[in-house]
Length: 210
Image (cartoon, rainbow, N blue to C red; front, side):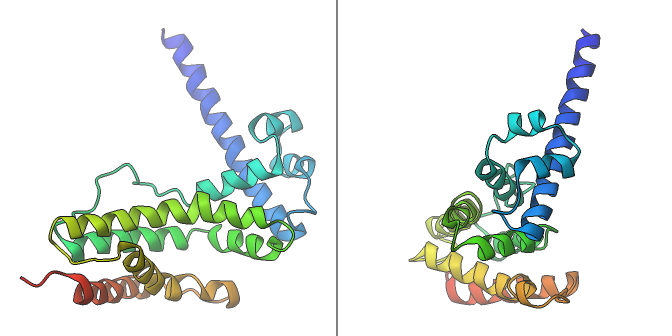
């Protein structure tokens, strides 16, 4: 029994390492040479894996790009407990912190640069970024705000607009400047302050007055 368990764990770990190496190599090459100018063969070579290994996991460049996007927007504790709908400030502070963590990941700015650069020729990259990355995350925030309304904690007549407002206040400071300013690194304290201010603004607007 023990004999068969170990190799499968080992093989899974190796497969995960190879997958991570492929995604990292692909992101780097897409940035350096453009999406069109990068071949799967070059990605395999750069990642140090065989072409067969790469094709088995990602038969097309589009599939590879989808995986990069999906992975980038994955929230570590997505399966964890939902923020409390009964405490708007605490819930939004948790969500805001997660969003900062997401936006400041090493590959996130690179990913947006690839999408923006290649959009005229490959509009499907923008669609992938939107539908596989941004939308599922946005939807989770919209659902939370709708839950606070249902719980009587807040009055949120348009949870979609409210989610846009909240995430916009944070990303406008934490993320968008990184696309244009190479040295934009405000630091953890400034990020926390941006989240706190966004939360305070949302609470002032939406919290139900008792």
